[in-house]
Length: 161
Image 1 (tube, rainbow, N blue to C red):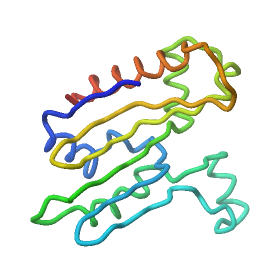
Image 2: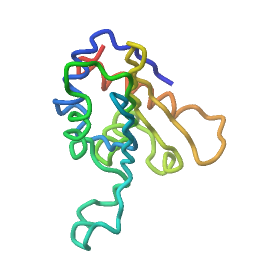
Image 3: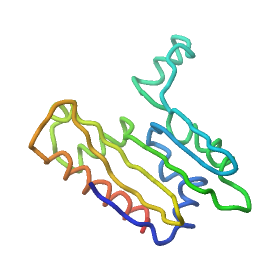
Protein backbone atom coordinates (compact mmCIF):
# COMPACT_ATOMS: atom_id res chain seq x y z
CA UNK A 1 0.00 0.00 0.00
CA UNK A 2 1.28 3.43 -0.97
CA UNK A 3 0.40 6.22 1.48
CA UNK A 4 0.85 9.92 0.84
CA UNK A 5 -0.05 12.59 3.37
CA UNK A 6 -0.99 15.64 1.33
CA UNK A 7 0.94 18.76 2.28
CA UNK A 8 -0.69 21.10 -0.26
CA UNK A 9 -4.31 20.33 0.51
CA UNK A 10 -5.69 23.34 -1.34
CA UNK A 11 -3.91 22.26 -4.54
CA UNK A 12 -5.31 18.73 -4.33
CA UNK A 13 -8.81 20.05 -3.64
CA UNK A 14 -8.54 22.24 -6.74
CA UNK A 15 -7.52 19.25 -8.87
CA UNK A 16 -10.05 16.92 -7.28
CA UNK A 17 -13.13 19.13 -7.37
CA UNK A 18 -12.52 21.48 -10.29
CA UNK A 19 -9.76 19.95 -12.38
CA UNK A 20 -9.55 16.98 -14.72
CA UNK A 21 -6.86 15.00 -12.86
CA UNK A 22 -9.25 12.18 -11.92
CA UNK A 23 -11.81 12.52 -14.73
CA UNK A 24 -10.98 9.13 -16.24
CA UNK A 25 -11.13 7.26 -12.93
CA UNK A 26 -14.27 5.45 -11.86
CA UNK A 27 -15.82 6.47 -8.56
CA UNK A 28 -16.64 3.40 -6.46
CA UNK A 29 -17.97 5.43 -3.56
CA UNK A 30 -17.95 8.84 -1.95
CA UNK A 31 -18.76 9.89 1.58
CA UNK A 32 -18.89 13.56 2.53
CA UNK A 33 -19.70 14.86 5.99
CA UNK A 34 -20.56 18.54 6.33
CA UNK A 35 -23.75 19.62 8.14
CA UNK A 36 -25.05 16.13 7.30
CA UNK A 37 -23.51 12.89 6.06
CA UNK A 38 -23.85 12.17 2.34
CA UNK A 39 -23.02 8.89 0.64
CA UNK A 40 -22.71 8.22 -3.09
CA UNK A 41 -22.58 4.68 -4.43
CA UNK A 42 -20.86 5.01 -7.79
CA UNK A 43 -22.10 1.64 -9.03
CA UNK A 44 -23.93 2.10 -12.31
CA UNK A 45 -27.53 0.93 -12.31
CA UNK A 46 -27.67 -0.91 -15.65
CA UNK A 47 -31.49 -0.98 -15.62
CA UNK A 48 -31.48 2.82 -15.96
CA UNK A 49 -29.91 2.74 -19.43
CA UNK A 50 -31.43 1.90 -22.78
CA UNK A 51 -29.60 -0.56 -25.04
CA UNK A 52 -27.58 2.08 -26.91
CA UNK A 53 -26.47 3.91 -23.79
CA UNK A 54 -25.55 0.61 -22.16
CA UNK A 55 -23.26 -0.23 -25.06
CA UNK A 56 -21.56 3.16 -24.74
CA UNK A 57 -20.61 2.31 -21.16
CA UNK A 58 -18.26 -0.37 -22.56
CA UNK A 59 -18.64 -2.63 -19.55
CA UNK A 60 -17.96 0.04 -16.94
CA UNK A 61 -19.09 -0.85 -13.42
CA UNK A 62 -19.03 2.65 -11.94
CA UNK A 63 -19.61 6.27 -12.86
CA UNK A 64 -16.60 8.20 -14.06
CA UNK A 65 -15.43 10.90 -11.68
CA UNK A 66 -16.16 13.58 -14.28
CA UNK A 67 -19.82 12.52 -14.19
CA UNK A 68 -20.10 12.80 -10.39
CA UNK A 69 -17.58 15.56 -9.69
CA UNK A 70 -20.07 18.49 -9.91
CA UNK A 71 -22.35 16.87 -7.31
CA UNK A 72 -19.49 16.20 -4.92
CA UNK A 73 -18.21 19.74 -5.42
CA UNK A 74 -21.65 21.12 -4.52
CA UNK A 75 -21.55 19.14 -1.26
CA UNK A 76 -18.13 20.46 -0.27
CA UNK A 77 -18.04 24.06 -1.52
CA UNK A 78 -18.72 26.81 0.94
CA UNK A 79 -17.12 28.77 3.73
CA UNK A 80 -16.61 25.84 6.09
CA UNK A 81 -14.24 22.94 5.77
CA UNK A 82 -15.98 19.54 5.63
CA UNK A 83 -15.66 17.42 8.74
CA UNK A 84 -14.50 14.55 6.55
CA UNK A 85 -14.69 12.99 3.14
CA UNK A 86 -13.65 9.81 1.40
CA UNK A 87 -13.45 9.17 -2.32
CA UNK A 88 -12.71 5.63 -3.49
CA UNK A 89 -11.59 5.50 -7.10
CA UNK A 90 -10.89 2.49 -9.25
CA UNK A 91 -9.14 2.52 -12.61
CA UNK A 92 -11.28 2.89 -15.72
CA UNK A 93 -10.36 0.92 -18.84
CA UNK A 94 -8.18 3.84 -19.93
CA UNK A 95 -6.34 4.06 -16.60
CA UNK A 96 -5.97 0.28 -16.42
CA UNK A 97 -4.40 0.26 -19.90
CA UNK A 98 -1.93 2.94 -18.82
CA UNK A 99 -1.12 0.86 -15.72
CA UNK A 100 -0.56 -2.27 -17.81
CA UNK A 101 1.72 -0.38 -20.17
CA UNK A 102 3.65 1.12 -17.25
CA UNK A 103 4.00 -2.15 -15.33
CA UNK A 104 4.55 -4.53 -18.23
CA UNK A 105 2.30 -7.06 -16.47
CA UNK A 106 0.01 -9.41 -18.37
CA UNK A 107 -3.64 -8.34 -18.39
CA UNK A 108 -4.81 -11.95 -17.95
CA UNK A 109 -2.69 -12.32 -14.84
CA UNK A 110 -4.40 -9.25 -13.36
CA UNK A 111 -8.00 -10.27 -14.05
CA UNK A 112 -8.52 -11.43 -10.47
CA UNK A 113 -7.09 -8.20 -8.98
CA UNK A 114 -8.97 -5.07 -7.97
CA UNK A 115 -7.13 -1.78 -7.65
CA UNK A 116 -8.12 1.42 -5.90
CA UNK A 117 -6.95 4.91 -5.11
CA UNK A 118 -8.47 6.40 -1.96
CA UNK A 119 -8.55 10.06 -1.02
CA UNK A 120 -9.50 10.71 2.61
CA UNK A 121 -9.79 13.88 4.67
CA UNK A 122 -10.44 13.77 8.41
CA UNK A 123 -9.22 15.67 11.48
CA UNK A 124 -7.47 18.21 9.28
CA UNK A 125 -5.31 15.61 7.51
CA UNK A 126 -5.60 14.53 3.90
CA UNK A 127 -4.24 11.19 2.76
CA UNK A 128 -4.12 9.34 -0.52
CA UNK A 129 -3.61 5.60 -0.40
CA UNK A 130 -3.45 2.89 -2.99
CA UNK A 131 -5.20 -0.42 -2.49
CA UNK A 132 -5.12 -3.86 -4.02
CA UNK A 133 -7.27 -6.92 -3.43
CA UNK A 134 -7.45 -10.27 -5.13
CA UNK A 135 -10.31 -12.69 -5.67
CA UNK A 136 -8.10 -15.55 -4.52
CA UNK A 137 -5.31 -15.77 -1.99
CA UNK A 138 -1.83 -15.21 -3.38
CA UNK A 139 1.59 -14.75 -1.86
CA UNK A 140 2.77 -12.97 -5.01
CA UNK A 141 2.86 -9.21 -4.37
CA UNK A 142 4.04 -8.23 -7.87
CA UNK A 143 0.70 -6.67 -8.88
CA UNK A 144 0.41 -4.81 -5.57
CA UNK A 145 3.92 -3.35 -5.83
CA UNK A 146 3.37 -2.41 -9.47
CA UNK A 147 0.09 -0.64 -8.61
CA UNK A 148 1.70 1.24 -5.72
CA UNK A 149 4.52 2.40 -8.02
CA UNK A 150 2.04 3.44 -10.71
CA UNK A 151 -0.06 5.47 -8.25
CA UNK A 152 3.05 7.19 -6.91
CA UNK A 153 4.19 8.04 -10.45
CA UNK A 154 0.70 9.22 -11.45
CA UNK A 155 0.42 11.56 -8.44
CA UNK A 156 3.92 12.95 -8.96
CA UNK A 157 3.18 13.60 -12.66
CA UNK A 158 0.09 15.58 -11.58
CA UNK A 159 2.08 17.60 -9.04
CA UNK A 160 0.28 16.12 -6.05
CA UNK A 161 2.44 16.17 -2.94
